[in-house]
Image (cartoon, rainbow, N blue to C red):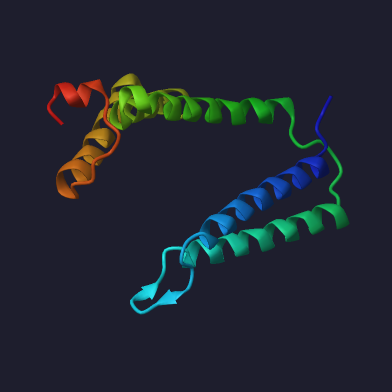
Length: 157
């Protein structure tokens, strides 16, 4: 059983329309005009939501008027997509427990090793080095606290 491309395009247009509708409704609950000091908090989300809604309608019209025949994706294409999506989903799921920095380090090492084909030493250097730079920039330089886990707490941050 394969998913037809037209059905997937219609589904994507519907999901985008639902998301943009939520953005529009959320921004309407805020002040969304132009205030004395500039744009109010809902100004840009309202316009971006409206643009996304227009794009979703155009995608839907295109999918219905000019259907493209064939399957949405082959099994190999879905496997390759999953090989990128699953580790990213695990990164997001791990963040509340490990903190951003540990989860990002593990993610970068894994992706560099499996998808980049880097040797272990380069993968570890990339993961630890990038995470250290992000920590320095956000936590120390900008003073923006990001999600921390037990390791950062143990280190006093």
